[in-house]
Length: 189
Image (cartoon, rainbow, N blue to C red; front, side, top):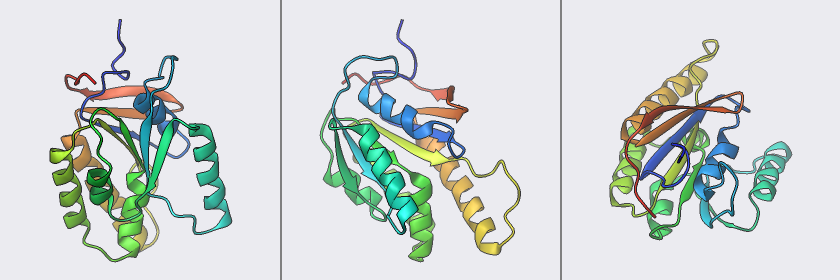
């Protein structure tokens, strides 16, 4: 019996969770079709992180090492919609990790967040391959102390809701365990 989080992937999946919840690792397994073992298939990784310091550079290196050679990596800290469309290849799954860093990058660049989200959703309408997004759930903790922190939390919540509405499959990760919140019929690759 096929599990909901394995292939075939739906057109758009969203994997949400807190820090260190296992969301990136699980999303990687979804994209490569290895949730329950098997031979990984090639996939595209669109990275939104920038190595602004040694700690972040180390995190990026750990992620790349874990993924291995089946992945092609494209860096897109701001122009996520353009990166998706420029690298579309029918049937090749794409993992975008993560929307939270992308949103942070947009805020630091003083971009229009609603316009960027509109452009991303529009790009998905034209996209020909399954895509898995990773995003942090930031609304379950304490209220941030600063106005910027509160603005970020609110913007992340709105982006997550928008992507969850568009997504065909939404999975919440807690302590490495997936909980399927939404699941529409999948496409065959």
